[in-house]
Every structure is written in C-alpha cells, then in structure tokens.
Amino acid sequence: MKKAIRQGAICSLLLALTACGPVEVKRECTLPSTSPQPTTGSSPQLDQVGTSTVTPIVAIDGTPSMQGFVNIPGSHYVSTLCLIDSAITAFEKSNPPSYYSFGTEIMPLAEQKSTEAQSPSFYGRSAELQDTQIEKAIAALDNVSGDKLAIVVTDLYQKNAEIIAIIRNLRTHYLDKGYAVGIVAVRSEFDGVVYDVGLENEYFLYQTNPDDPETFHPFYVIVLGTYNNVEYFFDQLKESNKSQEFNLPAEQFVIFNSQLVKEKTARLNIESDFLEPNIEGIERSVVINDGQVMVNITDNQTTERLTIREGVDRNLVESEREQKVKIPYEVSYSPQRYTLSAAPPFQLNWTSQIFNFQTGQFEQKEISKQKIDLKEWKIEGDRIKFNLVLNLRNLEEGVYTLQVDVAIENLKSRDWWKE
Image 1 (cartoon, rainbow, N blue to C red):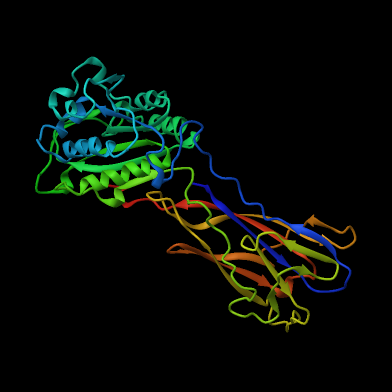
Image 2: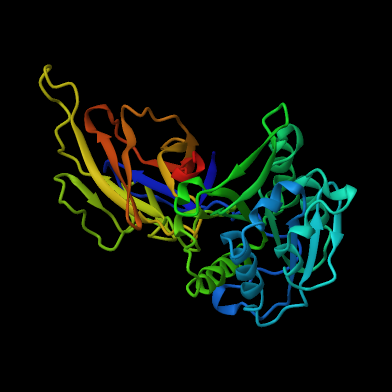
C-alpha cells in the first residue's frame, strides 16, 4: 500500500568553494499537495465537532445469519447496538438519526434507535432480508446529502463470498472521495446458524461457550464519513463502553483514510547552524555561496544547506575505496489516530540538479546513490529517523540540489485481522 507522506520533501545542497562574483538565485523546496478532501460536507477538527450538522444513518444487517447474536439476551452484540445509539447522541449538532435494515435491499425502520434489531423477529422477516448484499447498503448510504455519518453493522457474510464487491464500493463511494472508513471488530456470544460460508455457501449450527470468549462469533461496525466525524464517533463509542461489563479492545478500532498524518509533519528538524555531531570539513551554511552562484533558501526547515570545504581529503590510499560520512536527521511523525502505522522501507523519489557555471543555471543531472544516499530509515515514537550518507571520494566539485519526496510503501497490519 502506497500513500504520500504529507509535506514529506527534503532538499539538500552541496558545494565546494572556488571563485567570486556570484549569480544570485532563490531555491524553493515545494511540499507535496495535500491528500484529497471530501467534495461535500465539512470536516471539523475534533475540538470543533458540533459546528456542522451531522446526519447519523445506521444500517443493520437483517439477514438470518445475524439472528444468532440476539438469541442470547444481553449479548455483546446487543450491548454494542446500545453503544451505537448512545454514541450518536454525543454529536451536539445533528439531524435526527435514521435507522435501516438491509439484505438485498435497504429499508427504513420505524424507530430511531436499534430496539427492533435486538429481537430475533427482526432477522429474515421478509424476502429482501434473506440474502446479504452489503455493497448495496454502502452505495445507498452515499446518496444521502450533507455531512453524514453512516454506520453499518454486519457479520460480513454474504452469498458467494463477494468481499471484493464490498471493497470496491467502499473505495468508490468513500475513500476515492476523501472520506474515511472506520471498522470496529467485535466478538459476541452466538447461538444460531452461520450462513454463506465459503464459495459453496455452506451453513452450520454454531453455539458459543459463554465462559470462553475465544469461541465468540465476530461481527463488524463499519463507520463512514469525514475522518474527524469517524474519529469522534470512535471516541464516544469507547467512552460509552466504560459503563459496560465487556470491553471493546482499542487495537480493534481502525480507520482507513487517504491522509495518514496530521498537519505540518515531516519537516526537517534543523534548529542550529552547526551540525551535530560535528563533522570535519562539512558545515551547515546560512546561504550557499561558492563565488559563482549564491543560493538563498526560503524555508530552512524544508531545506538543508551543506558546504564541503576545500581541503577535505578525497585522495585516500588504494585500499580505501570510499570515504563515507553520515549525517543524522529526523522529522516529526504524527499519524492520525486509529489509522495504520507506516513501516520502513519508504519509497524515495529523487530529483537532482547541478549548477552549470557556463550557462549560469541549474540543470538536471542524475546523482548516483554511490555518491549521495538516504539510508537507515526507522520510526521511533513520534520521529522518523534516517541518515544522509555522503561518499566524499566520489563527489566532484560543484553546487548540487537534491530534492527527495518520501512516500509510504508499507503499513503495519493488525494482529486481529488473521483471527
């Protein structure tokens, strides 16, 4: 999975001093554009929830495969439905919630709460509730206008195991439009029939052991809307859960979102004009000036400015093929809450130039990673750390610019996915 890190651009300037009479140029390290945002509705910050009107919509899988969850009074499933009712009321400014049942079609319920769904008679009571087509419910909820918060409760079992259709609809109707998809995985007591298992649509009776939670049957709460509304709903769901006898594990809350990090992240942590540790012959410069070109920098926190002074020994004995130095860097890493964490290695997209003293301009020039490289990436707490590696033996004199856009290639999965 590949997502661009917001504002994840790093520029490095390297040079050797020669003559005088410089041409003055200004360099900008342009940060990548932000992730897509919803084209409709608002996305208030967490401390601003309530400034826009939220429209809560709850769609509950009404097919027979769900009945086993309510055949046991007070099951975790029933408790979760009550938690959803409670969490919805936490939005200070919202339209009245709408509740639906769905199978092959989606149908409105009379009550504006989950009371009907807590009874066995709710499940499979009409022809439209005999089979599940979750993707239809997802598509129907997208047609609701305004700043909606859609909540789908289902066991994700459906005929022919067409999970691909669900994923395709979530992407088309939500992720591709900049909305977030939240999922809470819950295990509950169950006494009933499990349907539509595998490609052969097998079914069997299943009863859990109330003293062994490992036997409990899973269902899922899918939450759709702006990231901030989904995040706020998750917080309220967990807050309401504190009064329950069962616990919703924190690691089983996850939000899939096109924006993985918060605002103003991934900027170079340059606080001093001195390199730490001090590396002989290499200095951080306020202005790059080799006598023929003077480079001014607009934002010191996005652009490193390094000067390799004359006299640095590049002529080593034959047995020493390289003279490498490492300069450590770190950038802030502040992932959005509930989202998946990034995991190295990252994808690095390089753009490099060298100043042409004859034309007086910077020109494109590929710089080998044998000369300059960014290596040893790791995440420690709220920091991404890496090293700039310079092979001084292979570097020719000149003024270079190097821009590196960093993209996430890997996200850490959750252990419970396999379960």
